[in-house]
Every structure is written in structure tokens, then in C-alpha cells.
Image 1 (cartoon, rainbow, N blue to C red):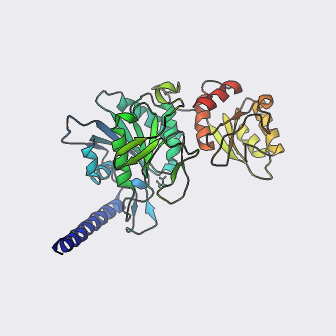
Image 2: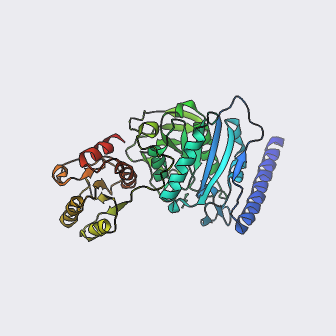
Image 3: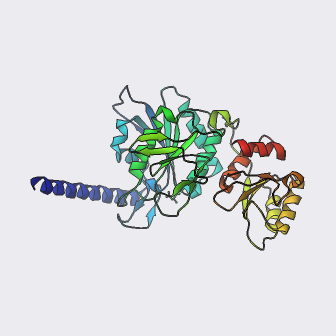
Length: 376
Ligand SMILES: NC(=O)C[C@H](N)C(=O)O
């Protein structure tokens, strides 16, 4: 009885102090986005790995009006608050932190991604840094993860993580996601696997991960049921191996002076599709196109005629699918060998766009481009 009473009192006090901290954070965040840009753990332990958290913004740093509010501002909390909210991460690693940006991930650009790649390369080139965790908005998290998976020149663990609920929410998912991400980055098993996403107890390779639900916390799934493993309160169980090329073996790692990449547009196919939008994209100067086709990467005859024209003009075209799983079969209903189209294999259109950006820095030959789509 005594235990129940004191337990209930303790729970109430914890909830109360949490609410007070959050209201202070909220009032503070209303005035200004937190601007402290670095965190260094004052008391590092010599037997723990050193992990740097790079914060980019997103809902994991989001602040709402109340703990049941469905509306919130992403990217408000700074790196220091993010780290101090989850002191348990210091039991698995020595933590340093960098505020890279404070944006929603729908505003992520090539410019940010190239700078982020340079930042990750720079950090991981230090022998005393064992891995990085990147906190990120979930809307385009899979694109950043795949970009880094192709562009970073290191085999050390690189984990991308976010949350679906803002930091101020009841049952916020950010703290445990961050704890698991840090534990995974600190785990030698995560080395050599390319960029991994750790969300809601699942670990999924950058190539395979995709956001499947607008609000739910288990939104990150694998397009083809290709889960690398599970992580439960920091305990990682590996289920599969990664066979595709990435990071140090990609051949795409960015040189220090890279500051731009080719532009590739995705065009979404539908019934009654005309070819004008495809021709317009080529006229606008896009360097490559991905068609998010219907079914097996199909499109109307008018769209296909436009695809043939733009390929003749030197603009590579990749056929992907608007269907969220399955792989595109070459030369099925469309004669890729004759037309010069490339199939995305099982890459989703948003990932095919990124691979094509990198691949056309090497070649525009459709056969060679196809090899990239089979191997990355
Ligand atoms: N859950 C989130 O993080 C969504 C937010 N719009 C973002 O991508 O930054």
C-alpha cells in the first residue's frame, strides 16, 4: 500500500516536472529557434565509443502548443536540448553534437545534402570518432539516407533517425528512437553496412527504407520486406546482409570541391497522360528523368513517344513505378533495349532520382546506367 501511494506520487511529480520543463521549452521556442550550435560531453568515459549527433531539424525537434496538440512547429529545439532530454544515451557512448540546420525535411536541398556529406566525411575522418547519428525530419528522411549512402566516404556507422510526434507530445517517440540510434551507431555490427535508419524498433538500410503512413509511429517500412534487423532498447539483432554497393565502394563519394549535382525530375504517370510534361521537363534543362509509371513502369503511348524523343535529345529516362513494392521487368510491355530506357529495378522513384543524379555524372549510356540500377 505504502509502495503504491509513493509510486503514484512519484509518477505524478515526474509528470508535473515534465510538463513544467516542456512549457518553459515551449515559451522559449516561441521567442526564438534555439541557436546553440555545439555540444561536447564534459565527462567522456575512456571505454565508450565516441558518437557525434548531427541535428538537421524535423519533428524530433518539434514543439507543439500542448502535449495533445496535433499541430506543431518542426525544428525548434536545438542540439543541446535534444541531447539533454535523453541523458541515457551517455550510458552507451560519449556524445558530441552539432547543429547543422533547423529545417523541416521537405526543405532539404542538394546544397544542404552536399554540405551534410562534407560534414559527415570530415567528422568520420577523425580516428577518435566512431560513428554519427543524424536527426532529421521524416518526410524526406529516406532520400537523405540514400544520398549519404551513395556519397559518404567512410565505413563507420551512419544512422539517420527522426520521430513522428513532436518532442512536446504525450508518448513522444523521439527519445527512444534517438537512444536506439545512438546505441546502433556505437555497435561495431553497424560498421560497413552503409547508412541505416533506426525508427520504431526497426533497422532498415537506406536503400530499402520508405515512409508508408502520414502519421503513425511505425511509418518506416521496407518497400520489399527487406529489414536489416530489429533494435530493442539498444539491443540490435541483425537479420539480413546488405548486398548492394554503398559508401566506400560506391564510386560516387563526393570530392571536397563538389558543390552541385545534375538535376533529375520525377514525373508521375496516370490515365490520360500526355507527353507534354515530359518534353517540357527536357526543355527546362533537366539532366535526367524518372517516370513513376503505372504497374510495371508503364505509361501511355503519348508519354512513351515523348520519352523516345527526349532520349534522342540525350536526356536519360528511368522507368520506376508508382506502386510502392515490386521490381520493374526490363523489356516486358516496353522494349527498353530498342528505346534506350533504363529500369529502376526495385528502387522507388524518389530513390531512383538520387541514383540517376549520381550515375549520370559517370555515364549516359543506357546499358551502363542499367548496371548502376542493378547494383546500387
Ligand atoms: N515527422 C516529421 O519529421 C515531418 C516533418 N514535416 C519533417 O519532415 O521535417
